[in-house]
Image 1 (cartoon, rainbow, N blue to C red):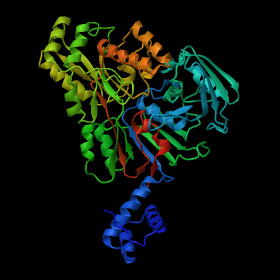
Image 2: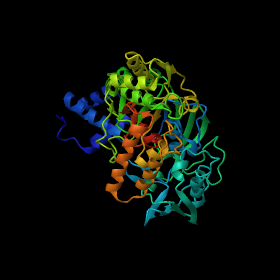
Image 3: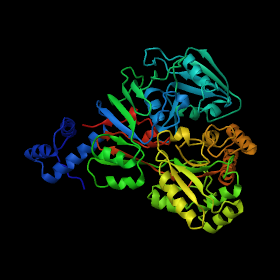
Image 4: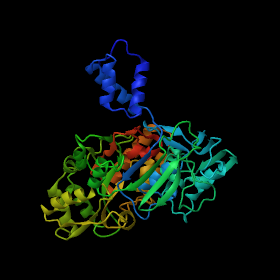
Length: 536
């Protein structure tokens, strides 16, 4: 029920909202309202409404401090080499892409004004005019040509090289027009351009100790593994934002420490909280949570090209040993959707609903371990706080192994250096994958034979051919059928075990406004710094 005096006007609302922005206390406001003849109940209702209005209205100013969950000395400002959440946050703050994905997952233009094609093979990109880099240089076609061609140079080591490999021609038409010709039709190209790796840098850039982009913030400091500091770009080309004067972003690896920093007011945003830590925030004043249901997951990877993963029965046994329901309910506190060992979540329209998760079956697991000859052999599993919830998952899998005589040893390693030294390299280890908008991007990055992040070293010529066929098909029914078959293939043949798709839980100070969910993951797909604001 809403209490409001009959003679209350919009001008009165504006007056109260203005006083809140100027720092007036609730007691002062109630005294003022009651002196004006407004009753206590009506005054409380008016203040609640005014507070909500203030919270939803962008406010300029302030320096936001935010903590992610992982960083290392390998952190980079080179978009082509970005691989961690910290890299993505920095890229989104300092650079722009040709396109971006909005909260509904729809492609919107960013540096591109239009992107057109008649056949999904030859594309014409018209750039926005009047956009400048932080050093004052104007954005022109040569910048886009250079940025895209870098992904094709093996010396660069681009994480998106496999996706960019389909671009057989990248050329300038005029100062603000670029032509891209693909080796085969791909209707997803505008979506690919929205990926973090395809940020646009200035022509000829080779120094990435600082970022010279067109983004909302100018890089003031960047120390890999320590922090990044940005200040507002006064010449930003968008009509709105950024609202912050600046930011500092760093990592606090321990999730409890991240929550405590948030509760103490040392940071405004604590990213990707462990679901168990959310209880620490329950009922605490001044903080709230932002929960994003998306396709991110922590997976157990068994390399198929080395022992023990080269024994198929060991991999099969592990798939039956993982109790997905227990992980979803106990470790992730229900903030997850049970996975079925393939990367396309139910939020994606190409998700195969007929592919059921393997049921936890210790008897079948034991049978396969015996067939592999490894039952009773100690097998290390590498886990780290760098991969969300992986230590807890490893522990519960270890306990399930003990019940059938399978000795799985949890090797917990520090988060610093985990992604460089253990991920993709250890025989049995955990990964942590952020959501991607299309099956083609996920399969190209993670499962194609030449995928840069092929976590289990899965190789299948049949799979590679199906991926190319789906990519070039404009027949949605055929495309869907192929993607369903591909999901079944990796669920049964790859060495990646995906117990659950994890909801992203970010902790926020109640001063932070504007945070919204995005299909590219936590922290508004890592682009939150451009869109959020700090209320007084």
